[in-house]
Length: 623
Image (cartoon, rainbow, N blue to C red; front, side, top):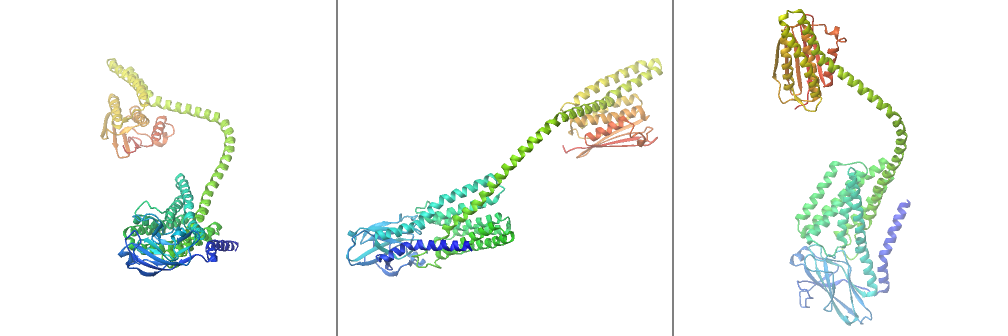
């Protein structure tokens, strides 16, 4: 209720202020308004003679399209009778006209609104006021000529006022303030607001609502230029396209912002709004100035409809969320729409058809609505900043508390890591010694035993084999060093190394050995870790066959697929019970550990007197 009274009071005060200049002038009874005039179309830059084809018109006079088709430069002739010469400076005042005008008194040029060359100076929202000294006036008939240059449909001239300068000065200053200076002063403020909000979005782009709001403010600012710009930098068609397009776009951007602000995006509806805006731009660019007014009438009406749809959704959100902020925003939007309806009706002469009274109103109120929204948007940033500072203070306290605990546990963790590293290194070295050097040493022992049992004439050959095994032990040490380097080995190189080494060993034990590596790619690369562990697994498998299997045949098959390597080692030996020795075999345990370290799977299949099969599947990324 208080809000309604406050708004009503503000409107009453504004109405009284607007009427003050009129009331003062009427009280003196010294200002005359001229409604009767004569008109002629002429391209002349000086007043046509009295013999021209003048015809009577009443002011306000609106140019129909038929008149514009004959020419765009017209002259008005107004006759005023003065019984006595004025003893003070008098003025001639054009309250409203479109687009540019020049004033002559008794054939003497007094002033104009600017350039009559294309592009015309824009005076559609700007009054024109000139003064004439007493010496230019005559007792009896005085002839005032008004030259008007206009565009199709837009041209008109409101009643002309004459009177003492001290009265018309005040009226002109007041009307110029309302129609020009206020818009001019608000323009840089709103541009600054729009750029500031755009900067906030640029630093925090996930908050898209800031982008839509900044676009709404900036396009509104672009439109507000049309209220006070006199000398346009583009052609009239281009300027009208920019001005009318910005009217539609700022409404569309504001609507999309409100949907984001209330956290209720309407994707399909928003796409429709954007399509509407692009369609309006295309139509404005396509039609000529003669039909632009009709096109803008419908599209600006559509923009008002978009505003009411957004208002309906905003009211529903305010009711559902019980949000006072949404309610205030809805009130502001409703007032904007009401003022927009007034401006639409005034622009297209639904109201104020005489053109001598009335104002475009929504550009007075829009900045306050934008300021209100910008205040709350920046308030969110301030709130987030304050909350961040509070959290930082809490975190600093927690960090200081945790730092003491970390320092206390740091030494313990270091000691645990050191012990863990030592244990891991010991385990690794034990596996390497068992799988590599110990296998060769065992073979050397077997050879010496055979030397002792067999006939002396074979000792030389056995000693040679013994030396070879000892050389293999040295080679294993070198292999260990090489596999610890960063260079990668190919799968085919690894398998070839195994074949070269164990073909001779197995042959010396009268064991037939066959290897099938035809399905291997020579380009497959292995990391040092993979290379070492695969080598040790295959060595352990073949060493076990040589020492324990009592086999006469051994086969090694290697198959490479897109993402896996398959190694299969088979023998026809005595076999063993896998479940019986699963926990007691150090060699088999090491094979499983090595397989798991490289992401592989080891499957051992064996039975008494039925041989043994060892399958290793190693998953690989595609090369």
